[in-house]
Every structure is written in structure tokens, then in C-alpha cells.
Image 1 (cartoon, rainbow, N blue to C red):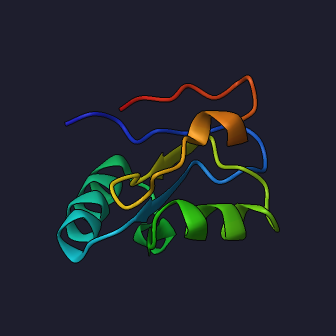
Image 2: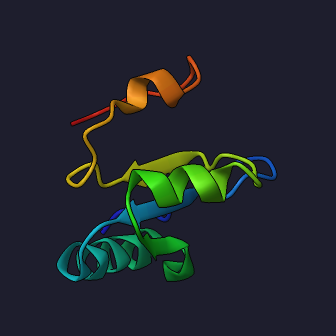
Length: 85
């Protein structure tokens, strides 16, 4: 088992926004394994992520389920973000 991820600074280490219940359950298990709070795993895709992050600091790791989105997240991200599909 890997050691829990320890992020520096005031930002949350992790936040997830997923579209379906199966993915939500899987991401909660993965978050718990990494030592991250499962409360940071949210239902809702890109739209919910944008709304939530507009009023808070971006986390160190952001997981967004793009399966129900026709938009590209690349135009919404700062240069420091890496997008993986």
C-alpha cells in the first residue's frame, strides 16, 4: 500500500466530481486508500466542478468526470494543470 499523499499549503489535496453512482463509489474507495477525505468526492461533472471551484481554492489534484460534457476543460484550466483523459 502506498503512503498517503501529503499536500503542502492551504489547498485541499484532492477533489472529485463524477457523473454516476458507480464511479462515485470507486473514487471514494480510491480516495480513502490515499488518505483523502471521501467528502471531497462529489456527484456532478464539469458543471458542478466549475460552480464549486469558483468560490474556493483549486485542490492540488482535481478529478472531473467528463463523460456527460461536450465541452473541453482545457480552456478552463490554468497553465499549471495537466489534463489526462
